[in-house]
Length: 158
Image 1 (cartoon, rainbow, N blue to C red):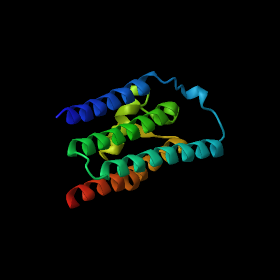
Image 2: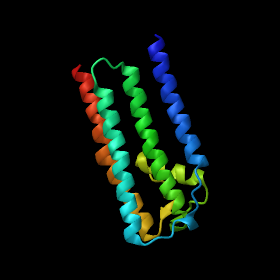
Image 3: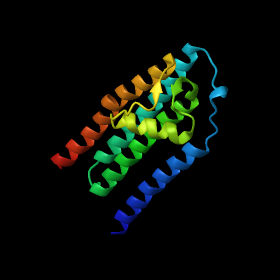
């Protein structure tokens, strides 16, 4: 019983930690003014890092002896990581979006893109903003759903 409580406490702390990092990390749009190729390279490296963490967490969740609560907690941590990552990118490029003026706007846009509802109140108008949004949609569709499917299929097989 105490293991299950610790798992949920760890997941909660990871979620709160992600929120704190998101709202506290100093990211200002005017600080990120580099060439397109450099931006694309940094995006590729950071996405590779996030993908590595997701796959590692996915493998960790599918190990034998994991409680269902542990698997769910890891899934929530992975989604939190993806949301914080893309929300920071959108906030950093806010000038290229029609409607992103605050961190909450960027967070809202990230979650609406992740959930594929896209209300149309925030629109990527710059080319780099469209690249970021497209990358997130493909990333969510391919990487995030693949890891979640792997975890859930192993769970059912166990």
